Amino acid sequence: MSQFAINLLFVGASFALYIGIAIWARAGSTKEFYVAGGGVHPVTNGMATAADWMSAASFISMAGLIAAGGYASSTYLMGWTGGFVLLAMLLAPYLRKFGKFTVPDFVGDRFYSSEARLVAVICLITASVTYVIGQMTGAGVAFSRFLEISNTAGIWIAAAVVFLYAVFGGMKGITYTQVAQYVVLIVAYTIPAVFISLQLTGNPIPPLGLFSTHVESGLPLLQTLDQVVRELGFQDYTADVDNKLNMVLFTLSLMIGTAGLPHVIIRFFTVPKVADARWSAGWALVFIAMLYLTAPAVASMARLNLYTTIYPEGPTEPALAYEDRPEWIRTWEDTGLIRYEDKNEDGRIQLYNDSPEFAPTAAERGWEGNELTVNSDILVLANPEIANLPPWVIGLIAAGGIAAALSTAAGLLLAISSAISHDLIKKTLKPDISEKGEMLAARISMAGAILLATYLGLNPPGFAAQVVALAFGIAAASIFPVLMMGIFSTRMNKYGAVSGMLAGLLSTLFYIFTFLGFFFIPGTNLLANIPENWLFGISPLSFGAVGALINFAVAFAVSSVTKPPPVEIQELVESVRYPKGAGQAVDH
Image (cartoon, rainbow, N blue to C red):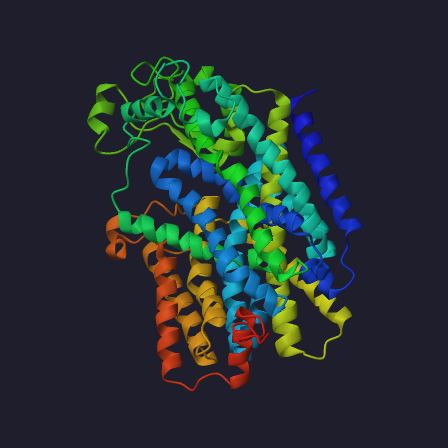
């Protein structure tokens, strides 16, 4: 059986499973469409949350970014996992106790204002649409390679599959589909990593293999990788970060962005009890850790495998002849995600850091520029082929990469759909709409969101994980602070909430546009800007944390000079955090 047939078998079987589950769990009411009827078990919800969370950025792009950036890119791991601790301790149980369907629903009722609800809808849609770009981009990469079609056709197929199971199944269908997708993606991610760890280090556990001895060189794996990248003009893989402020802000931005992501928060409305919301977050962390502990090993081993493929005798020896390139390079060249240009016309593949600092060394070797461009998003998907693993492993990772992109895309699209149909139409524009009419509006909204996501996926502004990082910044600056203040501050009023959200959102978007250039220019590399252009060295990807501080400061300043919330709202806030009668003396 050919590799294409195996890929088609794995991907087709997974699609049949997802669509079958959606048909079985089709939503019959708005409550089932928005929150799966509110009866999902915490373990099931934790697994679905993990799948919702571990997007194309986590499965496809994160390891690629770590492979390219080394230690500096470990902030993605720290920020994304740390955010779930904040979510479990500070937000999930209280939001569940409040008993609303969506984030704007909470904001509108807590701040007794349709204006606050509308601003929350705008913030939610801005963050979610930015996030979904990365999912559609990742799906296009996976489809184009494994089904041997164009990137454009791959994105359209992804949109069609999501439409089939998300529009009809709603949250109920998405929840059980995501459980299946989690199983597919974690198996697909782990099995190739085990094979590669065994090949390179003899250790079958990838996180331990990362710190084991490299079989061929006899040195620790990371030391071997440092030597190879240094010979090719790159910074040491384990090198420390110069800009500590930016690293801290980026990690914080990802953390509070995680805690403010609407498609993750909405999952905690699907469980029966308040305690289940906290347990769901805990189980989600367990399931996420299975992948996140493996990702650094996958990243380092992928980069080492790539360089040893191009320089089989070592980086100081002649590179691989282009005519002798392995089949996996030929295959990925067809997708346009690997490009070769023979700049010195020697017929060999020179892959090195094409920088002024390394230029004299490159000239001594007869090199006239880096000749191989490798899209970071392909490394995880190409890893099994680079390591010559069995064809069924390649088919498995194809299904896993597509599952990761589709699971998060479905959750994001549901969040967008719910905001439009429930918060904008039902709660603001047409309060008397029937449940049947609201269901129709929800499905039409989701269909429209899928079309918009498809268009933006066809014209992405950067690597999947980089675009996702921007979405986290937007969520951190606009949504997280208003949720925190809504739960923990009885003095926060509607004027402060609206002013804070707008200040956080607009300042973050202004910084992104100013220091990142025109955001929606296709092919823009979000990490390519010169750091000296950044204010105090703060990357646009890190500014969400600053935007959150601006949000908090403006909100408290405005609230302090305007009248406090009504007494019943203050009592509501107290009742959400403290059980009725808590702290009262009991006579015996």
